[in-house]
Amino acid sequence: MPAESLRFDAVTKAYGDTLAIDRVDLSIARGSFVALVGASGSGKSTLLKTINRLIEPTSGRVLLDGADVACGPAPALRRRIGYVFQSIGLFPHMTVAENIGIGPRIAGEPPADVVALLELVDLPRDLAGRMPDALSGGQRQRVAIARALAPGAKLLLLDEAFGALDPVTRDALGGEIRALHDRLGLTTILVTHDMAEALLLADRVLVMQAGRIVADATPAALLNGGGGDAAQALVAVPRHQAERLRALSA
Ligand code: ADP
Ligand code: MG
Image (cartoon, rainbow, N blue to C red):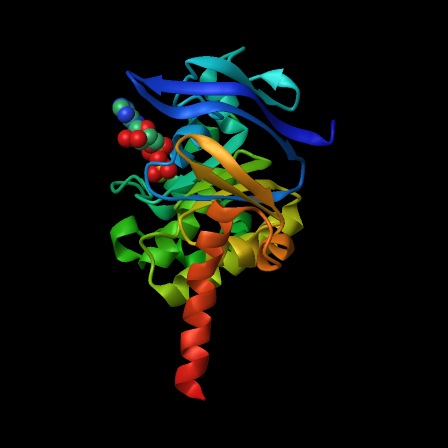
């Protein structure tokens, strides 16, 4: 297996005159945890969706494990990629176990090991028979992650996946995802508008602005003032909050 998991080669996506993605070149190492940060409308979701072909680029190409994702059937590609987004999308008429097992079942593969997957995302196994509407938001998001990983995906794409959660659950789940990433040797891309979350969880932070990647730095470099103006403007937000809290408690 090459050390590179993903490569974007001059990927562009235009909607009329709007360039949602503007010639992005990017390489993502296998096993890395990358945060993609930027204001609303900067192109984060569009870039993520070019990986699993929910969006086809206007030009350029995306390579996964060295092969163009545009070659071959999209369903097979998507089974290799766990994808979790904010509006969860559990099937309301299916139990937790049925939701988790849906990918392998549709593909005609051996059934998912639901008990192991529940354990993986730290849910009690007696939740298997519950319906989604009898779960908390955090539990539902854990089920969504278990479902995303059920087909044995090694690439995990999270698009504002914690956005609808309360801050305590969000913080806990973020840490658990990072632990899961390390344990399973995943390659993870976390889209978030929260720079603090990006700094705390990722190995590498990419900042998007108007369809381009304008900063690419480690959390340590960003905290030491690196990454350029756009990145520093985002780092300033949690830093000012921390300073104000410290002043209040002094
Ligand atoms: P983000 O996820 O960073 O908030 P998006 O990737 O959703 O940003 O959107 C990037 C840009 O592309 C925005 O200007 C958005 O309005 C535009 N865009 C996204 N999807 C469409 C679409 N289906 N049709 C037209 N414009 C779109
Ligand atoms: Mg988005």
